[in-house]
Length: 159
Image 1 (tube, rainbow, N blue to C red):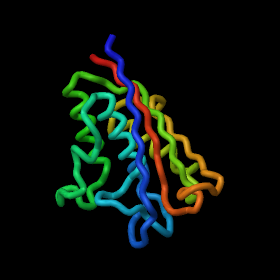
Image 2 (cartoon, rainbow, N blue to C red):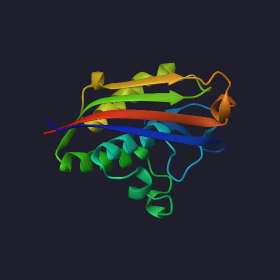
Image 3 (cartoon, rainbow, N blue to C red):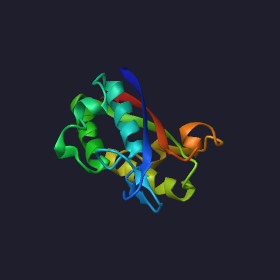
């Protein structure tokens, strides 16, 4: 059986005048995240995890921030493309585990919506997606409330 794992990570600084989008869900907050696309760190980490498991490089190689077609694009569309590449390679996703690092906002109430949206986009059961959130206890750039980071791991199985 061909089983593969992948790890993804992303971090973005807060920026005024932008919407905060995490896991495809818009979250009310004073600041959004700086980036070429919608700067959804959770979906960027997830895309990198899937691409890594497939041995296909990283999100920057597939969707470069120098390409205007990706300017302000929804990261859900990037995830759709990565999911398509995974399926074309003959793999299916069996597990997604994500960790958000943020001092603010409190993400507890938004995690179910993120899980649901990711599960729907990847066509996997809700139970196959897990999202955790933690603070950095005031340490480092995240602890100083300068931005948000995310990690993601995936498990793929060859069909």
